[in-house]
Image 1 (cartoon, rainbow, N blue to C red):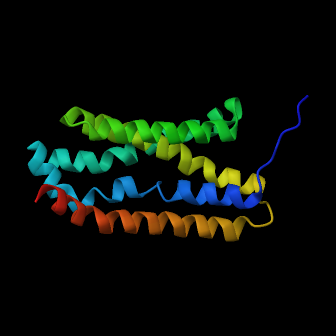
Image 2 (cartoon, rainbow, N blue to C red):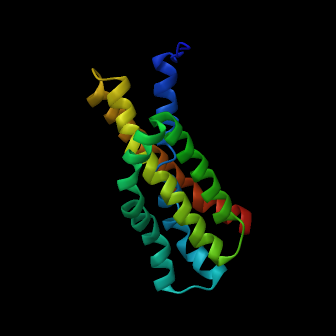
Image 3 (cartoon, rainbow, N blue to C red):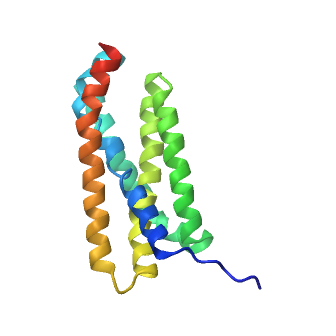
Length: 162
């Protein structure tokens, strides 16, 4: 049987932190530009509320299956799949029509739900003696990514659409 090559722990931690920067920002960045989205798509408050609620609904529906997928296909493969699903969701969400905004948001939410559920398992498995510290760094990184996304989205929208 071929020997499995392991990455240096620093690379694993860097990958986890880069992943973490993208687990909140795609949703928290919607809030500051929600009025612009409403005007661009001619949607009311109810539809805008659905857009904000959709990721949470997706989390509830997808998260319970993340561990089953990881058990069946392997943790790393499923995390990689989550990244691909997130990229597809962002792409679909960005193509233009209203349906793509909702569908892309749901797909993006599915990828984030899988990643959000499984990254702590990776930390626990690969760094059993550093779980508390790395989980704290992971959580802080998610918060920073979220804050940065929320802070830069409005100026970007103003610059692009002004």
